[in-house]
Image (cartoon, rainbow, N blue to C red; front, side):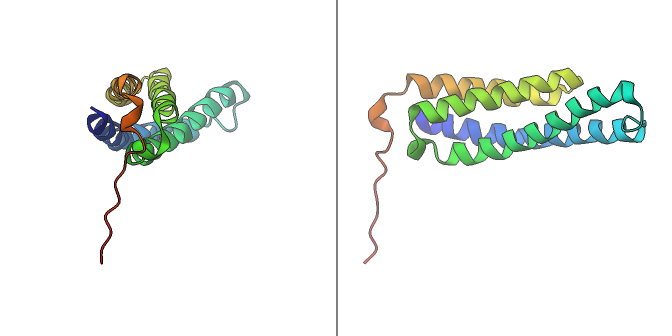
Length: 130
């Protein structure tokens, strides 16, 4: 079950990259519309910019943490999966539904990691070449 959670986290990170690209496109459209010069639109543009960077970090973080689940431990891996799921769910503020599949996949991965027995973590065997 832990391997499935690892695969889900990596796939969620890969599927989150188009969501991050869409978020970046939304940020670019706001800049083109003159949000930087209009004080009434500057706050909304700042939120869009923050969501863009958060979604990029969540995508890359999900791939990295997914690859290192067994090394990081149960609480760190599941907690980061929940945080990344929240970041992708926040993309709905931009009406960016592309982050929803990644959010759901990370939520399922976090649940799978939480129910996995502790002895499956850090039981990585080393192969010596000699």
